[in-house]
Length: 185
Image 1 (cartoon, helix red, strand yellow):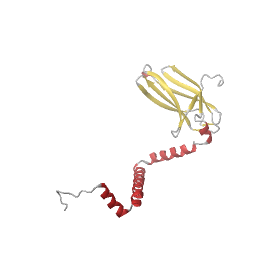
Image 2: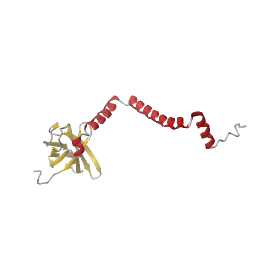
Image 3: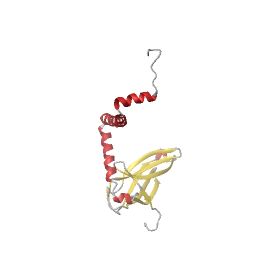
Image 4: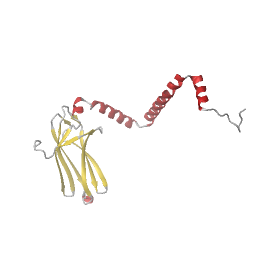
């Protein structure tokens, strides 16, 4: 007889047989995954309700942008941009980076931006983003970009920079570096 000092001990097999008799094996096999799915849906709904609307809108835009950029052209050209020319210059305590890129796909690229990350010997210093000269870069079209940073107090600390490209919605735009190739010029 069970009491507080002597609880009932049930083996795993006995426990499973009790559960399966009351619910059936199929009910348990289907019920557990359905509970997990329902829990995930509830968590997602709670996140959408709690997060600011701007964040949810950005997620939706990224999902839509990801679907629209997976065209045949982008699958054939994983690097839609070519970097043809890149120059940097120090003048009057101003650091400038400029270059020329070309759209190597058969589709227009909308809203491309250049991302320049300045670094010191200790790591990343600052990042700035500039629009390229042409908002809608047509197939095989070339355009330039130029970015300047007033580096007066930090001129001695700067060790280098990294260049990348992205769309205005944040999706990365990979590029192929063709600087110095004779066929480019």
